[in-house]
Image 1 (cartoon, each protein chain N blue to C red):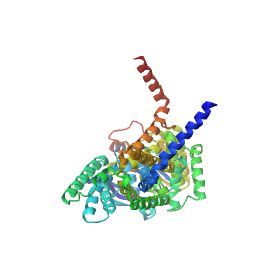
Image 2 (image 1 turned 90 degrees about the vertical axis):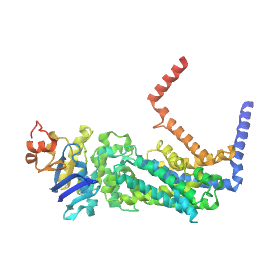
Image 3 (image 1 turned 180 degrees about the vertical axis):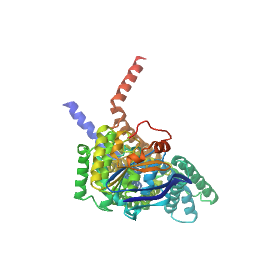
Image 4 (image 1 turned 45 degrees about the vertical axis):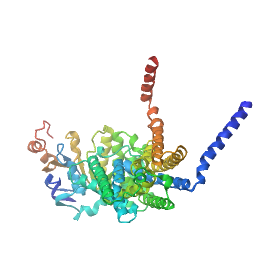
Length: 238
Length: 309
């Protein structure tokens, strides 16, 4: 279980997010929602120790997460990556094996097998020897999903995985999420798509500088919570 | 038949001419040493330059190279090793840039512009006040590869060997870090140490190249061959390998041009590197300007218009 307790993260005297406490259970898919600038990416970066935190604690199975980073797979936002980097698809996925491979070693035969099957899982086997820059946005996102699978982590963090991807990719991503859920993994996914795909999440978190609501869909998606998060009422109700 | 014999004879003459053109300068020790240093630095800069380009911090090379000046001046005044002084000052300037960027809202390019000129200014004042102007400023700024000593060759060889070994040992981690820094950090890689190591490698390369092309032209060597290779390859190791080959070839050619036409060596090397880049930029099979059908159509339309006039 991932426990985030009283977390505050900020840059230079400014608190971007404040007073965040929640728990994520294994075998669940959690969706993190909020408007632009709500601090969704900052929350994930704070949890992973990618930005300094001002206060609070993050524990995974009662241990500080910082000492357990090998259990973590993180897929950053697409626009944070230089897609012109000269690297082949299979080598991008192999990067997920670096923590388990260790320093000064070459990837094992087992790692190569895992990479091949991860690529097959996201339907990208035919592109293994392609430069990453020659792929479409959706294909690139699937390669990063394959990298996360190859990491064989317990905790998965996805920052806007559905931005600018095609429907085929979206289906594959949700299928893989379901498989990871079945394997008792813990998933936290940033999205801002409050459409019908929201039924894929077991647990919803609404964020706007602070945690507005956390829980299952029916308890979280009330008009009052939506109003507090987005500053307006959405017409649809689920 | 006659023409064929003529052709054979002519090409034979040309070949023997080329051979003597190539071999004659090699009878001088200073030319042997210059070419040795040129080739070593061609390899070294291509490997380090590849990371520099992919990290999108090519300008950092410019900052560090200018910032070595106060270090050189102080080292000269205190009678210390000039290369060591240059290394410390260069490293310090990079840390100043990173410090300003991290601890304020200032973007990295502005921090670089400020740091570059400030360190240069400090260097000028130190040279002026410490009366260290016996330093051959001209060769420091513009390089003098034809004046390298045996010791310079050894220094370049040791630095090149060291960087090549480290690159080989940490290749996969460096590739991960330069491709996806946040992903690498999230996996628990010590990204701060890796970044510091890269800065050290860049500074070492600049210190080693000071003598050859000078601090004002070192960016050409550091960025040019690797950038040319970048237009032609699909993987990082290929970029380094092809960049190294190009670095050796362009340095050597530049030295020959400098020898025969009596050109300043650093400038001759820098322009040879740029010529190679231009060729790749125009004719690269995958990314070349003239291999893009749209550009071709545009160009031919342009040429037709010119004809009509």
